[in-house]
Image: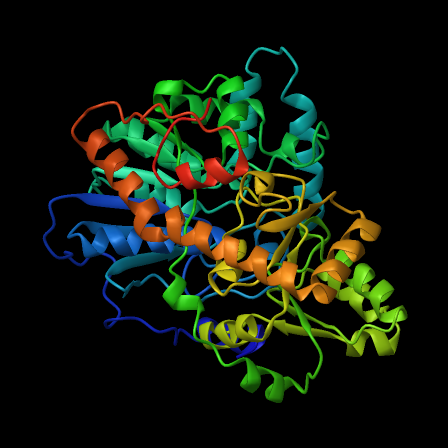
Length: 482
């Protein structure tokens, strides 16, 4: 299924659910605890943060908790700042999927927000470090427009809405976190935040500055629990003043059974591909390294490689323009699948020889775990939290973000040295099974939630995490990073 088809199906209100639509005011089933999760997009859209919250929400629901997700009507990320993008039109109804109640709220935009949004965000990064009176209050007010979802705030102010714990994300789209914080303070319930901080490259703050503004860090310092996904993110947040007693290192996970068992031969037949496949799953965008992957493959094609680049995920407008400008022969060797079904993803992973996502905007990268589950060697960028997930030369390869030459070398190595490729893929799979499944990760979250709901400080175990191989093993356990 293409992203166009899926977007249309969701917009028509025909997305799958495990029960009939229920009125927003309906009394849900009895449960010992009421949990609210706020995330910018959710099922049927699938991305890294969406998978993360779906895994948590569905597991808490399976434990008997009453879980509600508040989210927006966005399908396309660009819907947050530009009109004419795809949405999920469920109206004012709440729906249930896999035991989780889902409520959607419409994104609103001030006039000309497609122009005003980037200007405002850039101005906020300049204002943030200035020692001005009322600085944080100004930033918080502006942060409510990233994205602007007034209906969600109104719903949380409804006296009839009562939850025992609130968990929100993403610090670069902080309006949901700010709304969650206001609710938690008013109701005196614990707030958990997973910020998904994108650390960017080394000492380059071009990405990080959008995730570390004064009001954003203030919200994290006040939260009952802040979840870092990697040791790098943990150390950064600690350096920003987040109380170590409230800071927890819990990575992401994968259910190997959901991504393995695909039919690679069927995928090749459907798409007419004979040679090796380099797969990339995620948003097609500069920050994800997608143009660099294309440029690296172009070098290999000039050398005679018969590899095909298969890109699955939503394409941002700038990448669409980039792809349209490619020579026709190169466009033919880049297969843009858009949004794909779970079955198509399994088949793609079964067919792939290499997985490459040389991104600088991944706080963890669940897709690497999905590839490893299938024994596929992975290539990532030496940026964000990825170096804590991929151990360079041990279970994958890392390259500098934007370094097309280094990326081409890594791709060439894994496409030609299949013994090395199999070894790296096997080690990656072993790492996943050792500690990066959702069963491992959920156990850490269950402890944190249980402690907070008992009124205790949810603290880590104090284990030392120093390197990528040991670091990722500990990230599913809620342990401390030193």
